[in-house]
Image (tube, rainbow over all chains, first blue to last red; front, side, top):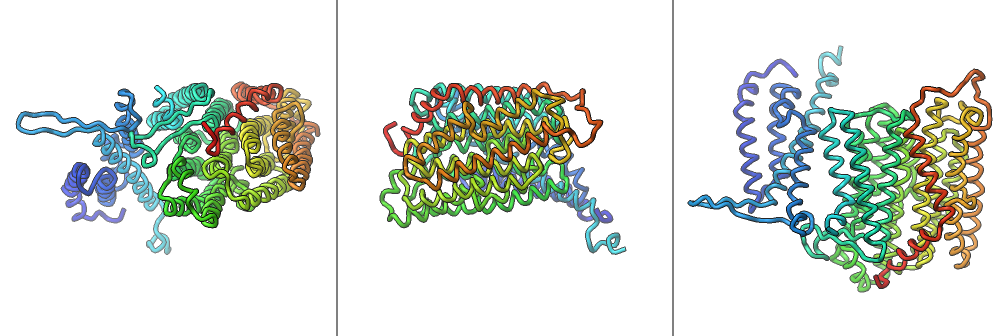
Length: 153
Length: 487
């Protein structure tokens, strides 16, 4: 990476948290409104890319859950598959979704296997696309760009 | 229970992909998980065939969305038997991969992606939804591409690029065809399509099926759309090459059979006529291409194309007899073709090259390998009493019965030319002395798993050859329920 950009460096820290929180909002509202796991995953990837631009791809990878894009996306796929299993145990077809509510007295939290599936999509997209983006940034670091001073010399 | 079983063709390999990916930092654990996964897949596939053997169809509608709107897996005898042979090939090739005969680069992501390919293949066999079929083709393409690119050698990247571009052409064509069929009928489910297609003008049906059929022919490697196959296959490690050679093109051939022989049966005559000529050209061009080459892998890759011609010819003959011959030929071909590639990898381990001009002397050093090679090679040519004889007999008997003299003569001629290629491998690799006078076969080769896998497949070839009645009866029963006939 070029000489350290102080402003980017300073701003990246709070922005990383804000973007991830925004992605969680998009993930959860996707239940009934536009949003959902896929889009939320893309938002989360932008946070990882921001971190990679500020501190380098290796640092961004270390910030991912499980510290590995591969494991992150594998866990996502596993969650998606697990979401379909309760239905099989009840004798329904794979991926038949179940809904329920947890009463808390003053309000209720709605839970469903769809949400588990969506979280799976979220993690899978985040892991897979962050993996691509980070390895592309890494390749960019290894080979100096065509118009960089090193290449011209 | 039957719901679990109907979902197993993709659930088991996908679960294996997952656990092997999670274990990518522990090579030993990953290999154990991979072998356990393929054994589990083989077990569920056996259970599947047992369940549908009597004529029932196993159905799962994912998410309980009813057909024609939801996505169904529908396993009849045809699908179940092909899922079983997919699992069998996976088992043979992964066991073979434990030996040191051309295992290639043991990259931590190789095994997850191989199981991903198996999931794609089995999903394509199991699904009863046209768009879902496209999705499984895509899963297969992406996972296979990952396998091609592993290692990153220049020739591997070259092969990956050719494989990707030429297959993307087929994929786009398939997507256009699926979209057009959905626009015309409003359905994607096989059963609903079969009912809806009667209401379409015949010219439109012909056009739609021609687009779809062409897309599947690209995937099957038929003339003149096979360029991707010999351009890429020889860069793969031996056992993976055998797996791909056995299975991938056959998914395209299966899709043609499902399309013309089942969902849209009886198809317009003009399409069957065209398919017959394409099949004839495929047979001939494939075998001529093989005659030109000296690399064992390239010779065998061209023979895949030639044999796809026989399978498509059987599909073009249509009717119950043609469809049964297609299925029987596909079983025989998958086993024999994969086995030839596996034996090729053993030859590489013993002599150090795939190039016939640089090797030789194997008959002196390892006579048993010569016998092992002769079984699938003679079966490929169609010498009785091996499996290839019965497969060719079924196809040619039907071709003569329908008065297709040109197709029959070409098919016989191609058999003779196949004999030429196999004789070439035999003479150069086994009979002729090794070009380096002081060459001796290496003693430290770890070949036990490789021999177990190849002897197993050769035994299956011999078993089909000597006891074909049961399988022919199964193929006829499978064909009898295709094409809207009473289930």
